Amino acid sequence: MIDENMKIAIVGLGFVGLSLASVLSAKGYKTIGIDINKRKCKKISSGYSPFFEPDLEKTLRIGLKKELTISNNFSLINDCDFIFVTVGTPQCPNGAIDLSMIKKAITSIGEILHKNNKNPIIIIKSTVVPGTIKNTILPILEKKSNKKAEKNFGLISNPEFLQESNAIRDTKFPHVIVLGGSQTKYMKKTRNFFAKLHPNVPIIITNHQTAEMIKYANNSFLATKISFINQLSNICQNIPGANIDDIAKTIGLDPRIGNLFLNAGPGYGGSCLPKDMKALINFANNVGTKPTLLHAVEEINFKQLEKIISLIEKKLGSISSKQITVLGTAFKPNTDDIRDSIAIELIKKLLKKRAKITVYDPKAIKNTKNVFAEKISYGKSIADALSNSQCAIIMTQWKQFEALNNKSTKHMKRKLIIDCRRILAKKELDVDYHALGIGK
Ligand code: UGA
Picture 1 (cartoon, rainbow, N blue to C red):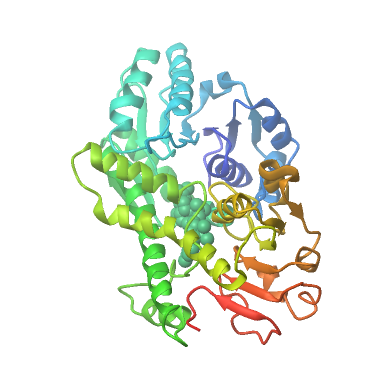
Picture 2 (cartoon, rainbow, N blue to C red):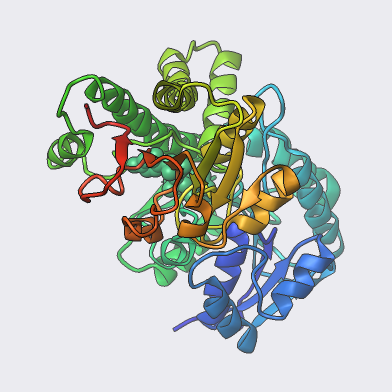
């Protein structure tokens, strides 16, 4: 049974915030979703998500019918018991994180605390480097509210591990809950809230700085797994007949290794892993530890794109004025997100080499058009994008690309396919086929 009098605010309606607001309100919690972007709020209030995420709109609409209010008016958080902060912490040019959005949100929350007699718990989900809550967020909150943390309000770190394209599933069924902060009545209340929300999920209680570091440990380890398998995949490519997928599958059976995040490919992209790796490297340097392994992970990721381009050049000769098709621009399947997508970087590099590019993606074309507009062409289907092409490069692991067959490649000018995800490795196709991680 949920506490019907409990009121929850969520500040920042991106992937994390909107998923959380939708899931909590659909469960029946009185939830207020706050975002400074008025247009975004209007769209969400009408039951539409500003981005594509499986099951999100369905959950959002259930929430809106029940207990969800969406607004850009911060004063609505006034009588909330829990205030989740889920605003973005984008990357600065030097790799550090930009705290301007979180500072702004915290300032507004502090000003509201100043005026009321509630003792809310502020829960920081945004990804921030160790020390940020203690040294930046807490002082702003105390100054603006003129109140004391842990006495008049609670302040808890609660890093988030949800994956885009699985945001609703991960919000409903997290594998762990991390709570950082002091052992006060506020921590007890937060623990009880999460234990009720996610029975049987381990809850780790620690201090702020450890909780903040756990998030970076998690993402940098995932990035390390990917760069490890990508390096092995590059070795395999030089061993005739060797196959990286059989290797990954086998080592994944060793419980000490685990089978996830061992899919070799064009490198990790998206709005999280690249940014968090940079922030951790920058942070490590600032605290006097040379992050040599993390540097190597980044370098392997960066060089993966060069490997793809040199493979294209090896097969195609000069790239200039060649008609090249890029299949997949989203940074991974089941999303329309192209932030830090390796496919977008590839297109930029190919355009510099004067290639003529056509792309196809099941969901991300609108976002891709915002980047390239008329500079490239957009196929209506896989076959349309392949028509007249001299080389197709599969960048994203969309299920739809598995359907590619001799009929779809019929009108290719040159039947050359470079498959960075080995989607077609087991198919008999009448094409010159090359895959990352398979030795020829
Ligand atoms: C990542 C983490 O997986 C989440 O746990 C975390 O909460 C999130 O960042 C965050 O910090 O908010 P996400 O950015 O959604 O989630 O994407 P991932 O599923 O991690 O994929 C990242 C990139 O790695 C993609 O480009 C994907 O194609 C690539 N990847 C992933 C591989 O190349 N191989 C793999 O085996 C797995």
